[in-house]
Image (cartoon, rainbow, N blue to C red):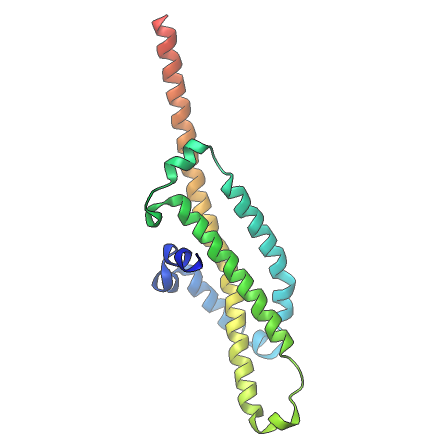
Length: 184
């Protein structure tokens, strides 16, 4: 399911070409001194559970969004073309990235301990590896935050469509009422 959602949201090429991906790269590079030298995972562990709860709540609200007629209108038999599935996929990827960031941070925190003496010959490799994995973990964290914008944009697009749907329904109801009243 996750790979299907990944494909619907653009796959590797679509995600790498996205603004939110490059914004995450930029922010990650700007924060190099923080994640290369500090206990960056404390920030992730402090922020991510709240963001994850908020996201899951938003996803639940989205699933109940609009009327059955509207959900039927925005659903398509071809999942690749379905706006309803597109927003659901964006939320799933958003949640998956948040969970990845949290799990990665917890693992990095668990691996942070004094280097045992038998590993001293590889201490420089360990330091470089720690910095590389810290950068990857912090990037996943920042990218999971920037994906919020993608999900929000899809919800905004859907809300505009719902607005148009409501206006059209109201207009149809007005015409129907005028037709009934005129026939009597």
